[in-house]
Amino acid sequence: MNRSDGRLHHELRPVTVVPHYLDYAEGSVLISFDKTRVLCAASVEEKVPPHVKGTGQGWITAEYSLLPRSTHQRTVREVTRGRVGGRTHEIQRLIGRALRSVIDLSRLGERTIWVDCDVLQADGGTRTAAITGGFVAVVLALGVLQRKNTLPVLPVIDFLAAISVGKVGTELMLDLSYEEDSRAEVDMNVVMTGQGRFVELQGTAEGAPFSYDELQEMLFLAKNGIELLVDQQKAVFREVLGAGEPWRC
Image (tube, rainbow, N blue to C red; front, side):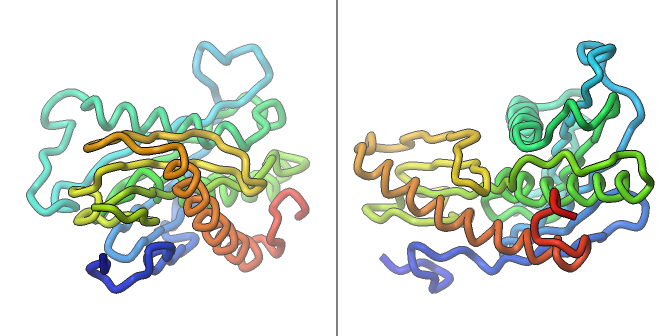
């Protein structure tokens, strides 16, 4: 089966990461997976939620939203509906969990990093793009705190990136576009660290169940894709921070 954009089954879409996309946020990036574009902004707040207060630890939390015309048909703003939808709530929790897994919160101090992920255009893989770009935005924000001597070292434990994989027809594919995702027999999102450790797996058989061998092959595809994404993150950090591994700045 040929992919509509001509990619091989193991290939990512063209990925770009533009740092410091916003002037006012401590850390920000515009990350694009071809037509999917997500603006990630990390803001530092000098307080923590009540459940963390007094522990000496920091917190990272995320908000996620789709702009009305990020999709093929206009999406009503959730503020207009008066509530956050279940899908949005689940994605926000996923992004926050993922980012906290690679930041040493005990070294962050009692402050919160808010990560706002706004989808400018959606063509599949928005949550994985938000995690991949959100990590870069957080590290850039931490770099600002370090330069202000607020943090003695960057409390970064490892890299973090995410990608989708799936089964379309009989073929296993990396980094599904919306068109591929909409007809996938299996849809899976994989979140991993730079050392290849799993943070979260979200996999569902939309059609027929998948085999253990297919699961292994999908995880292999995801691992290779995430390694390429981490390489791009390193390139951004070398450009902005002067080091490919932020904790060695």
